Length: 127
Image (cartoon, rainbow, N blue to C red; front, side, top):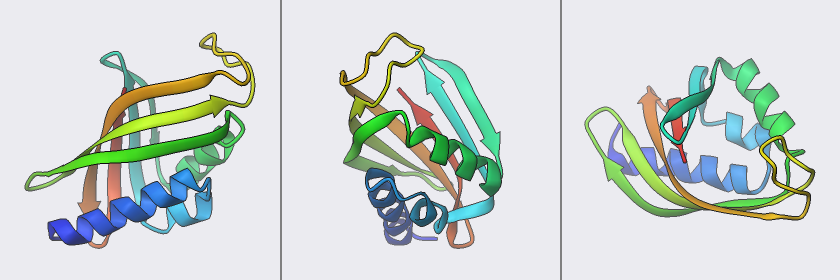
């Protein structure tokens, strides 16, 4: 898969994420998707498979009243693509990490995507 095809998949995923459209997010994910989240250098979450991803993505809709990942730039490597993003959200409830309902969340991060055939097969998020 070339870099243009990869970018189309990632853009579709980000647009669906920003639109809080879980079904559209799933359209570009491989059945055996691997998702990992890292915060402060430590893995905080891992899941495997489309059903587990759907469940987590649907649950996450309750955490923010609005959210947006803004793509800053792509870096392509032979077997993966990395994006750097600016993330902004508004907490929809008091969260376990101490964030309060209505509080703004702002951070920079990156995501690394791997691909299979014509789908995203793995996503590693870092913040």
